[in-house]
Length: 162
View 1 (cartoon, rainbow, N blue to C red):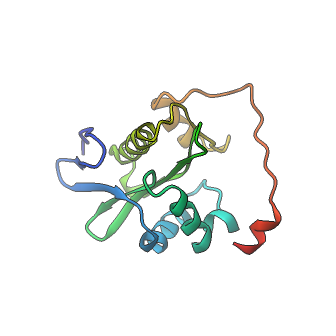
View 2: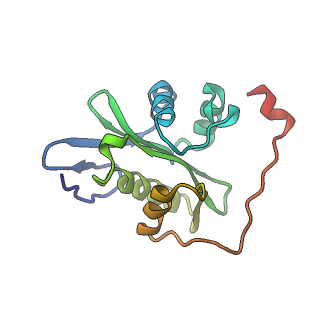
């Protein structure tokens, strides 16, 4: 099945199916969360995985998060947002049975275009080192590896309330 690249907000057209990329909503939570849970290498925690955390992220980034949908089925999802300077992509997932069909690339292209439309000129993504398939995907999309950085994080007290 060969996908055709299209502009954001249009559909990915394949020889057999028509997948629609659309803005993610809070109503998508259960299906998106189920998709994430079926991924072999994805980091979910109480911040990312809770309905409240999902709602907060969408409220702050309502124009930059998307799902790939076929009928009532969500085949892929991407969370992306920004801090006013740099964009960040989180939790890109495509159902394992639908991978290598252009859905992931279409989601990334749509999110990057949405971030660009908001004046964001640089986008980053964090991928687990052990996620070889994921790292190969990002390399194919020409996201440069930054070997000069070390990623660090710290939970805040607010994370307890999500």
